[in-house]
Amino acid sequence: MSRIIIIGNSGSGKSTLAHSLVRESDLMHLDLDTLAWDLANPTTRRRLDESLAAITAFMDTHEKWVVEGCYADLVTPVVARCTRLVFLNPGIDACVRNCRARPWEPHKYPSPGAQDKNLEMLIGWVRAYATRQDESSLQSHRSLFDGFLGDKVEVTR
Image 1 (cartoon, rainbow, N blue to C red):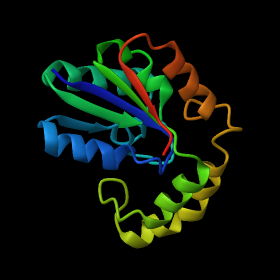
Image 2: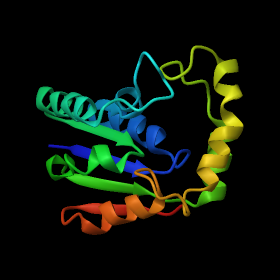
Image 3: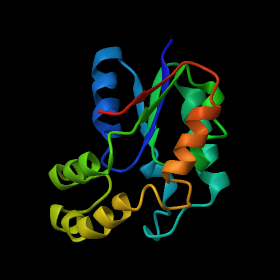
Image 4: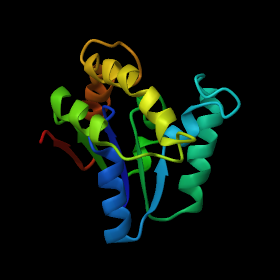
């Protein structure tokens, strides 16, 4: 039974890998971006307990799944339920290239123009991965990955 969690910086390939696994292995997919942010105010994080309840409900409802996102605070409490942890860490330049080439994500933005408006802010955030001190930083991902005792893989290219 596959229960996979994928973590990494924005643009690292989390969604691409998740979609591939969904097609190949018939897994249910959860993009943590859909649970991390307040729907009424998309620039504000949703309360942690609400996000965690939604993640737990997803995991309880589906036997096989892939969960992907950059939020260590959402993954840490549920990582023990996965059969494999994947840390995508291809480097900042690869993440920036991937962000610039990213197709429109209608589940996140109302239009391609709205997504494009956010691109330079996203690129700046991606570039700060190694120096940020938040739940989506390299430090948080490294700590989560290094502390996980189950099956895990770090992909660096």
